[in-house]
Length: 69
Image 1 (cartoon, rainbow, N blue to C red):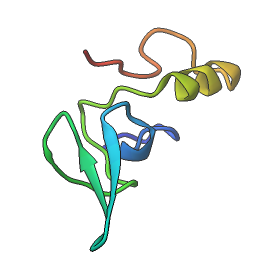
Image 2 (image 1 turned 180 degrees about the vertical axis):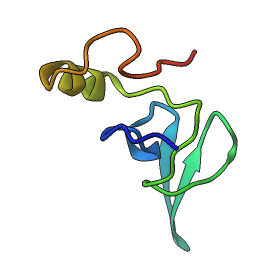
Image 3 (image 1 turned 60 degrees about the vertical axis):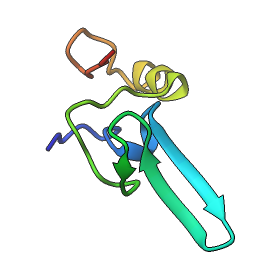
């Protein structure tokens, strides 16, 4: 697991929230299964607004965050 302060499923481009009559489910569209906003996986690709916030807070050097394709 990463100790990076921004690394979590909820900040990834593949994180989706599905609302139905039965409730709310959190899923990873890339991996295809249910997840939790706080979970961390090695395939993390941060959302653009998260990348901008990370740069603003000094995480802009190569290797400070992993951007997977």
